[in-house]
Image 1 (cartoon, rainbow, N blue to C red):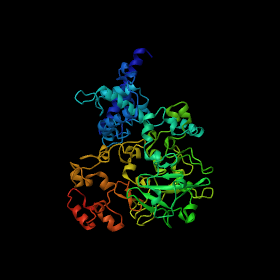
Image 2: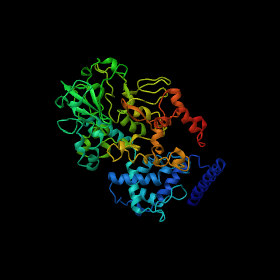
Image 3: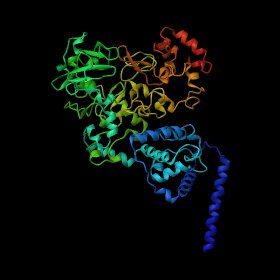
Image 4: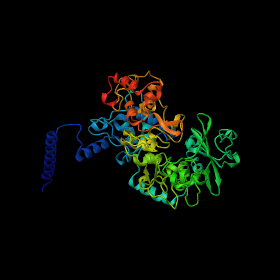
Length: 548
């Protein structure tokens, strides 16, 4: 075939395909809710790539990632990008999924394989004929440095690739634990913050820490007295403090605990029906070792055979896995990072200990364990642990009849049934276990953290124009705080001391009448009745009458 005929044939073929595709698009319509076809996606990416100036592609990021810079970039992302790309960059926002083309999942290889320069150019200049605006609008108050810092954040949220996961599994199987102090050399700022957290100080030896014991042990008036010399470990310092005595190679709890809030002594003994494991141990604290009931969560790599630990307290390797290979040669592939995991595995890092449950197999070597023996980050928690079951309508030693927890250490049980969890929110979207200046290691003060995703008129709610209109309490008052209604303090840490629920559900006064679960209204207005609270809510015209 002559060259001109070949060229004409190719042009005719292209024209035919183009016309056929145009006809199919017209027949299908131009709805933005449609998923782009494979052809459109390939064309769009090709055009975007061709539209990136060659001089921009190889530009290096002038900024190096530090915890402070990543926090700054995260704030910028939440303010300017999360509306379309979602809070964690997955693109699953109400706006992002209704754009055409859809907002991409920034965590996936399609974005992560781009160079820093390509990502920066896209952020700074936007993409024509899409919903991606130019970040560098001169009227937007954002400079080029902000865009480069956003590149750091985008890099930080990249999911581990299958190859990286395989390398991490292989590394975890061969690496050994080296202790948190080994992390300080490269992660000094994070290490210094972590050292001050409850995670790093839940278990303390009073011989090493002279200030570890809070009360005067001689004032103990609820049990036989014990002295500092008898205390091998002190457990806790925020709500309660307990004391462990070492006998042989086991630790046993003393029968008294210190109520830190009220500054009084209280007995410590798990009574009949107080926990699932209680029937399997004699009714004597000196015959209930802490290894099966406590130590697995208050240490790194507790060995049930030797009863030895790699490190006491919740050290770096509790969440990141054994670190010897990473210390020798640091790469992203030879250490585990929950921030690069899917939301289930990420939150399981916390749920492994912040939940009430039991191992799938019990007893284990003749003992009943109250923590997931054999599990470490990177494995599937469900293969080692089952959350405490609950039958709706029944009051159990763990749950109120409607399903909310009422026992200590049940944040995970609550969270797993929440709308937040089902939407992919993780524990560390709100908390930073490396340490912050805020209560409960929150990323922001308690009156601000919720507003990252929820705000007046927000698609996520509340839909009222102001928080005061939503809460019916004066702005800045106790009752106007999100946690006052959505995270009431109803779960007992010790008798009389309560911590917040984590279902984030509003418990209406009628729930108290039906299920005997405390509600936030009369828990605060203690001189009022549920009938009073129900009547008050009926006057809230914006509230559905079916939620009273």
